[in-house]
Length: 289
Image (cartoon, rainbow, N blue to C red; front, side, top):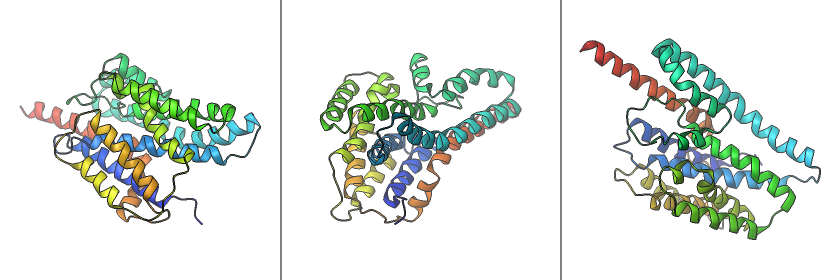
């Protein structure tokens, strides 16, 4: 049987579709940013599943098998996009725009962008910001989780009570934090990744196919009315967890599956393309005036 999880790839397709719609038309798809919350749950689920399948008590081998796989998948694409974006920025928007984006690129390169944007009090939802690497905040949170979780997993093992404590602690921190802390903070976001981990550790398995959940999820993400946080994120995590638990494995969902196959690449490139286009259109408007 193929190692590809078709239903998970379809869920990734839902996530990237929502995020792209949000960045193209925030006023029409105000909940599309919740696609990132879905990505977090998926990541926690898949990584915990991979870790539980690593049958080795050698720490060096354990870390090599896990981290080499992650770095091989993530680093080349992310680094290439960072470099290409800076080159295109310099060519199209000039040296000033390049210099303005260098700090963001540097923090993004080390997967610490979320802490940088938290320090800068950057508003993710504000219009008109020419920030070409803002979306790297979510990749940063994932990589920080991947740095800590495998080590904890190796030394402590599969201890359900530890995962529950981490989930509850992070969720409580999320509920009692203000923006932008609850949005960019890794401790405040860890509960979403732990929700995915708990699916594996609790042994929840699908008993029958039920794709009604994914249509409810799509309705939530693409609805024209905006749900307030933290309610919106909680709904997204609950529905994502329900889908992973209920969906029958190895069933494709057409175009959503195809989008899921290239979701990481789309996430890397879509934001810069949209921002470059918006800035160039703005400049053309000023020239015409």
